Amino acid sequence: RPRLRGKSTENRKDLQLQMTGVMGYPSTSNIQYRNEFMRTLVTGAAGFLASHLCERLLNDGHEVVGVDNFLTGHKRNLIPLSKSDKFSFIEADVSRNIPVKGSFDRIFHLASPASPIDYVELPFETLYVNSDGTRNALRLAEQCGARFFVASTSEVYGDPQIHPQVETYWGNV
Image (cartoon, rainbow, N blue to C red; front, top):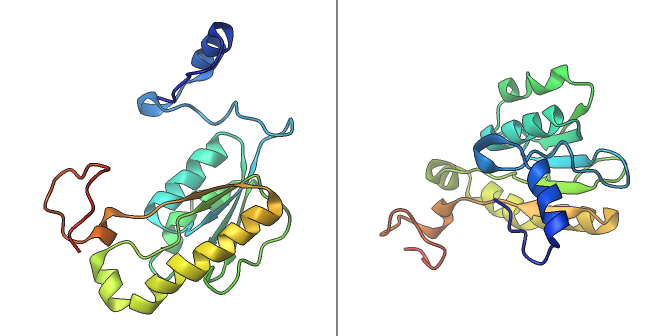
């Protein structure tokens, strides 16, 4: 649950009333920006997690632009999304450029191979999307004044000696 420290009691009650969602997480449907629903870019949109994020954002009424090059993502993950008139898709490699038009309120950078097998088979592509792709997404966020979120996997820390990993665990690389 989001922390509500520093809010007045009245504001805290209002926020708590607005928080409805799955497993205690708030819904994004009531979050508005500039009096309208948000426009969001999701990189790696054809991946498992990113496609489900897109679905959630669309269900909450937001406009979503997905970008993916299908290196490890799958077109089948986009089928449910393509039914929405608020979803658009661009096939592109974000490590080269992000060929989108317009401005965004949020950018979720989820583009990256996400398994040790992929890291071995696609070492340079993994490196480029996590360096150049992140830089390109950050530049776009800066240009738009968008909030930026990047996700990775604990696999980057190697084969862990501790399960589950805690935030203070530095990995076993």
